[in-house]
Picture (cartoon, rainbow, N blue to C red):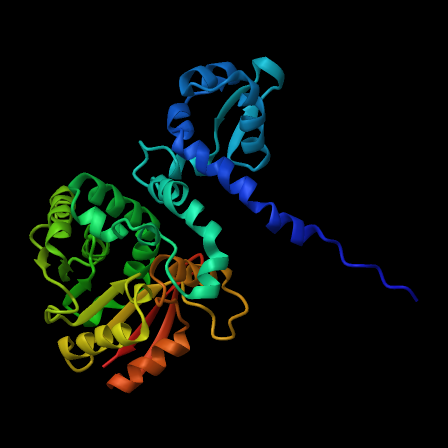
Amino acid sequence: MKTSSPAPDAILKTAFGFWNSKVLLTAVTFDLFTTLGERRLKGVEIGEALHLHPRGVADFLDALVAMNFLERDGKGPDAKYFNTPATALYLDRQSPRYIGGILEMLNGRLFKYWNDLPEALRTGHPQNETKHGDKGIFEELYGDPVKLEQFLDAMSSLSRINFEALANKFDFSRYHTLSDVGGAAGLLCIEVAKKHPHMQCISFDLPPVELVAKKHIVAAGLTDRIRTVSGNFFQDPLPKADVITMGRILHDWNLEKKMQLIRAAYEALPPGGALIAVEALIDDARRENVFGLLMSLNMLIEFGDAFDYSAADFEKWCREVGFKRFEVIHLAGPSSAAVAYK
């Protein structure tokens, strides 16, 4: 009996996936979803607002409809386009849950750098700004307060859902203090403090970042329970606390520096304290979490020897340092919290 051949659909869908990606990223860069807001506009009105040539407007907007990123009422020139519930919530700048900042970074930086993935795989070298003799992204950002705040807001938009989930799912009732290492704009501390009134939190990061964190903590009305401490986590002792968190920090570094950070956390924790690493943890079998594996390739492109890891990797490293008990808490999408207890 002849068996049917497998269809090439999945191959072609992935191969052409950058077309879909570039349409969505361009829409965010053009502020399409913010321009629409709560309105329903005709294609010609959108084209005029975004300064687009008439040739591509209908194809651009209808592609977004077909991808379920826009809604459309009617058809032809009189059709009106409007946001979906998801794009209204996450891609309109007026929404408190806006995540477009990270999409702008994908479009502005990573889209072109990922074109050099073959070279990264052959050489093991970064393929970012440094390849072309420019400053690295962090060096550039720390010298420009405006760009730094934009970058931190983009990172916050990517992490917000996970930090909210951590505040809801981890049992903070046994603890009283938290130190967020690499605290960025202070979002993890803010989410935990909002959910758990008994917690006192510290957001720990470099001096240029501390100014941004203070601004957000003041805006959240939590200056009585969150303070900032500036320092370099490779040079200075970590602020002591019952819980130490690292949100998307460990994956930025090679194994030697990962171990340095884990040891520093162990030294700063009391007996019974917890180290929590929030990452897109790769599943132990390395078969399922596509995003986690792609993120690890992104670390290759960004930093060369940095990499993402599994919960089993995290446990192994933490056991070497002295941690005794472990658990994994799924947060949102591909992300989880790996927890090590001292």
